[in-house]
Length: 209
Image (tube, rainbow, N blue to C red; front, side):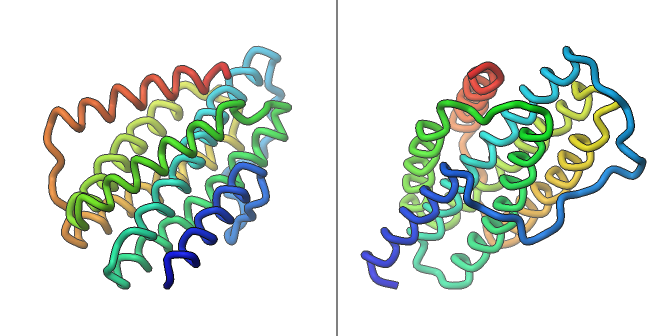
């Protein structure tokens, strides 16, 4: 792939992600029981805020995997990043659909989140494949914990959002395991702390904006 092709693909991914033009390859997860519970206004606003945060996470995932796939020179690893990115596209479409159902909006800062995550993905990729994979492992583990906390916070009657978050969590766990098996190196503790601090700022901001 030429540098021009890589740039065009990256630009196309960014435009589709930020415009909401991505479509899921897999059907949206359905709750194990009929989603007949009527959410109160407060519950609906809470679910909307939490799913907006999850949507921001998927915007960032698109940027990260796209940047890492663009930088690596290993074709096998590129395919792995692209495969994980396609599953993250499913998550992006699912969370956007659920936001519409809840009458909630996506984050107004999505272009900023995407640009920042893309830059981080480029830096991680240029540090070498083991570091890039280590970044995936740490990111996905933090996302897994974040999604688990949302399972505790989502209204008990919001079965539709819970089904989506549950499937997302399973996918993120597999992405981390695949990256670990591919030769990820463990990131330094200060860097992992910095990643957690940045994630907290992002989630707190996206909850409202």
